Length: 295
Ligand SMILES: NC(=O)c1ccc[n+]([C@@H]2O[C@H](COP(=O)([O-])OP(=O)(O)OC[C@H]3O[C@@H](n4cnc5c(N)ncnc54)[C@H](OP(=O)(O)O)[C@@H]3O)[C@@H](O)[C@H]2O)c1
Image 1 (cartoon, rainbow, N blue to C red):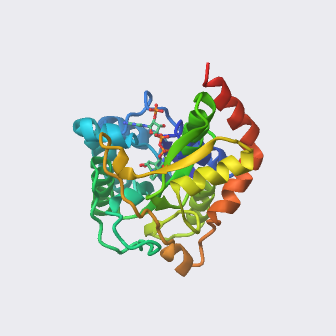
Image 2: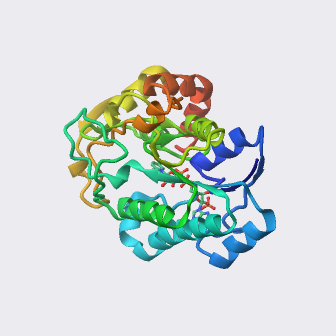
Image 3: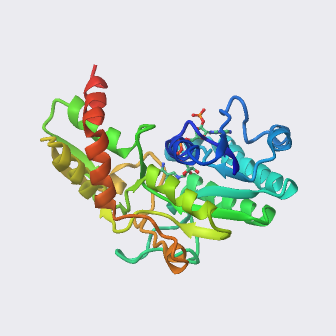
């Protein structure tokens, strides 16, 4: 299969490149080589390489910055996917587009999960842009897969794990505060890349929830990481509302992979199993990085 992969320097895109390059020809231009907001750029690239599949992991992902940079976020998160969707229609290729748990309001009672067909109602500029990206893809691409994921971590970019480790190891105080009233499913980007590979072996279309099984709060996730890596810093709970300046975030980010399960295609694992494997593999490296970030 010939795959055009966008966003390959990012958290998920890097793992997609690694996983999919084993059995496919993956063409992965950098943002400088192909900016998805350029219609001419997208069309020229599709004309030149005629891919079977486009995978779009490119996005403006700084949730707080999205609130203050509405023009840039609409360009990257809505116009870019629309260009790719229209391009996929013109060149008759499949489009895999990544969306987010932040398309939901997050007010369902915990532990009720969100299903693929639940009403969307984003509460942030980022969430609204991801919802509009989905609409642009559905309206313009006849052969699309939209994967909604959330709480991604992975070795190729800074994430929640780096953030709590750096905070714990750089601070002189013995404790750090982590949010306890937001729940979701920490999801390994490598596992999502494997799930994409699985879906590409089928001819399914539609919108799929794709997160780890099970859920936890941010605080419980941080505690799991500290226990596993034997970090002694004490974790204190705080609330989403303690952060007044940033974007609003949904409290309940639990997604049920109902469609993947119905089709017998769900390969996502329990969040603890994957996080344990990830920390076994990369824990020493992550601690080293966090300690050197101190200087
Ligand atoms: N991270 C999460 O927890 C999370 C949760 C839910 C959904 N998602 C979704 O998952 C997808 C991947 O997220 P991620 O965390 O892997 O993102 P990321 O690490 O921030 O990477 C974003 C990628 O997009 C590229 N990019 C940005 N603007 C571009 C443009 N105009 N044209 C071409 N490339 C562009 C970036 O290139 P440069 O490196 O050159 O800037 C980078 O490679 C996104 O759709 C995101 O909304 C992420």
